Length: 259
Ligand code: DGL
Image (cartoon, rainbow, N blue to C red):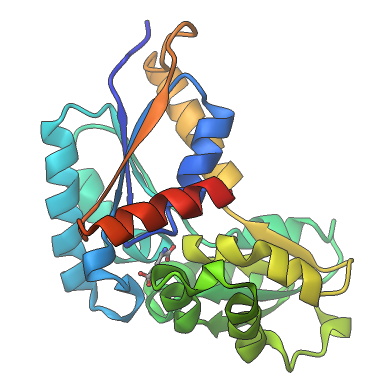
């Protein structure tokens, strides 16, 4: 069995476009409805209750449109309320978390030093504490909140090479990279900075995000339910934003095409 219903995906703003691009690449037959909540970004400096309210409002709307699954393309929203969303909706809800396991497994048993860059909320919530507990005995983990990277994307300053570079340097410029094995991009907005991380870090430092793993998980879940789109389906993406100004929709398109 297959399903031609769309997949609803959202983020606090433009960061989730990096996950949408991965979905378009890995599951080209699927139709994605993407919603960026830029009018209410950043989520990383809000309370979990405020974020839950936004997520319910967005997801209720998607469910009313008949989506077959919800992808929370936001580590922060996942930390705040993915379990509440799973109780509220009877379709699969796929969340995201910093890809710390991927970074630690990369050491093949050798102790790793991993920097986890994320929003303040993600790093303070119990979901991340539980993740740390699984790995902190055997690895050195440095959590690093980087809220200004989110605003650099939302404001469009990411499109200016110099601004993007100096935003990354303001957090990472002082690191002694000789002891670092990997940087986990634990916020979907940060994936837009990948090329600046690659420029700044020594070649043996891996830059890791959770986008591919998230889409693989979505694929497994839909396949198990018999809900993958049929192979003859063309697939596509509709991008919407809570900031409905022409400037923001132009920025969405520009950022999506950067990926
Ligand atoms: N893109 C989001 C994430 O993955 C959060 C950005 C924000 O603070 O709004 O965590």
